[in-house]
Length: 170
Ligand code: PNS
Image 1 (spheres, rainbow, N blue to C red):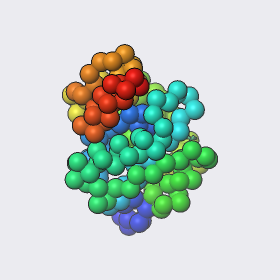
Image 2: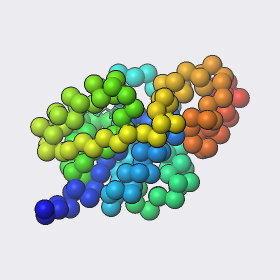
Image 3: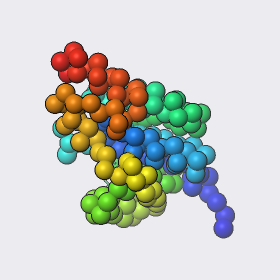
């Protein structure tokens, strides 16, 4: 099989509001599979945002540096146009997503099919570590918003930021 350059570049898209340990698990493992990884903070109009996109990006950068894979990872953002436009712009042929449950499969499958039809971009699904399977950003937002401790579910940088933000009355 001949390998095109684009199959070695992947995009990991998501809201990352905030980044969780599940996200970091997917990013770390995807970094082991591809030569170049673009972790892309995408504005999702279906979700009420907790953190500004720039804040999510800097929390991702700090968390990725703590994983030691920052050399091959670029953190970006995308809020206008199709996700596949960004993928094509950076020469990526693959999107990587984490799949925790049948609910995620049902949500992600149509998007994967459409993205392949639109631009020939494939989607690769990674299964999470079982310890991360129940963690979601929406759960973290809810617990953090009510003043609870989210440190078991998020990277250290995110836990410190949310604790400080909560102390300052979020
Ligand atoms: O973390 P999320 O909110 O589940 O991430 C969902 C996201 C942002 C990856 C998804 O909404 C998405 O892919 N948006 C891009 C918009 C797009 O290109 N849509 C058309 C093809 S599906």
